[in-house]
Image 1: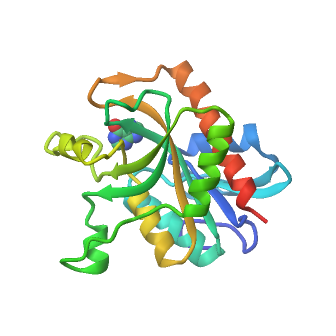
Image 2: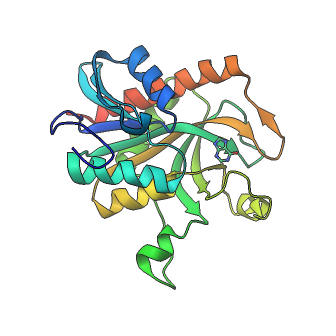
Length: 237
Ligand code: HPA
């Protein structure tokens, strides 16, 4: 067991899907996995292991924001030997060419979080980057499934509510969408020499003040969740 995950050694699979919301973790386990066991309920950050397409996979809720996902990602890699981490979440579209319901594959993750500076010191701006094998696998599967997919740089920001940030400048430099976890996930995966990718549905659009309805949210999230499980199954031995 680790501090935030109360699971015996060996109970977590080598590939873990990471939704922020614990109830989405439960939904993913109940609707996509068979032979499911729940291995964690500490702080209601539910974790499950089961079978998908013949492969043993896990789902672990991470909570919101870099500090929270950093706890779960670190313990999964350091204490449970997890090899592949796939964030399975939502994001807010920033660029006008991004539409509600699109699936964003985060090739890289810019940030206003201090986690990069606190890791490398002043004057070094590490670029948190997706694992190429996971990214390529997900992009190929998405294309094959006919999903409208955007691959690019995202912003992983420290604050959901932040009217002081110049987001337009980031859009001008090609940033597609905003969320709150990916830079931390990619940084820690680099530290532990593991693979990571963020797959996200565009649930809101910041410039256009659009939001998915509850019904649309469920169907489009299902497509994204299936893509994440299919990607996980492909890269798992
Ligand atoms: N900002 C940050 N994270 C998000 C958003 C957003 O607008 N929408 C969904 N996740």
